Image (cartoon, rainbow, N blue to C red; front, top):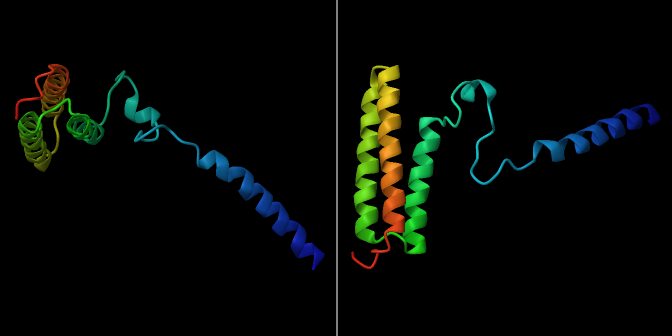
Length: 125
């Protein structure tokens, strides 16, 4: 009986010590870092992460009142058209040019969201 109890206690202790390390927070809505995904790209983010960030920023703008419904509707329309374009690009495989085009369009939409949230004319719409 004692020979089974000691290994069980050791296993429980090792498991208990490993769990806090596995549960460490990486920040709010931040994916786990992958060195190979970010190698050589500086602040590069995957397309899905960029889409989630843009969608979240529009939602936050509406909730905080810095975006009117009209502004949010227009920005969401542009966001939706980008999702459609990305879907079309991915059908045949995403080329480097298409990735660059999507990045440029995401940058433009990000700038539009920033401007609309700071323009203080959210009383219209």
